[in-house]
Length: 334
Image (cartoon, rainbow, N blue to C red; front, side, top):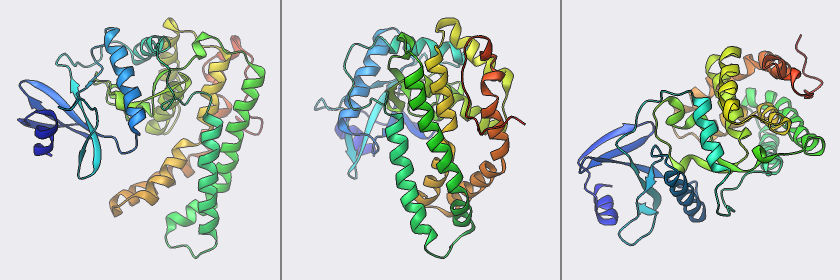
């Protein structure tokens, strides 16, 4: 990799350090990060480059910037695998303002992004993407049902999938109902979001935003995934922390009923379950598979508590005072 970095970018790796899951290196007292982009198309990377340049121009210097190769491209290759190099600006700091406020500011700027985004766009596509993901896992599940169980994980997967299939169908229907019942406002416009905010460095308090983490979507994506990540980390609902997060966000950007219902739909969609199953079967190491099995056991053991969390979500946030927002009827708070 050292030779590739030098040949492609003219940068010499002087000192290396891990930042999250990524390798970073120093060159002439400036820090650079190497980020694999195998899961991104070239068109997506070009759009991410534009979004990063835009936020940087708006004054957000915590956004890492793409470094171009000697030939002016953004993507380079090492052993046929694509990667990019990002420059991290030296003023990176630990956040001192609340994450809700910081996220609201980023979303507000992102709603005014002037260029057309086609390849990173996810807004309006949740039903389609969830349906595709469900169909793929259902086909896989049907094949597994036909053969003897090889592991205890497979037994748990086979027994639990029908429940999560039903939950996914409920989430899709809830979005359909929302689109029929509610009027979207400017706050519901597409903005710069994270593919998964829980995975980002800056959500952990280290103020560096990586354009490679982003998609173009409704703000509800980030808000719901922050809540989900907190719930999964704590194993329960930290109501006070969730209320504080949304208070901070809404001081800058009040949310519409349409937005709240998208947040709820996304929490109903069992993304944590899908990622657990997919992660197990794509894992190369036994240690990683064992971790996924433990994760699945935790998810299944917590099913009833999560149902109660969903059933009382609007009440916990005291939203009934502002909106008339329906929950899913079969979810009971009792």
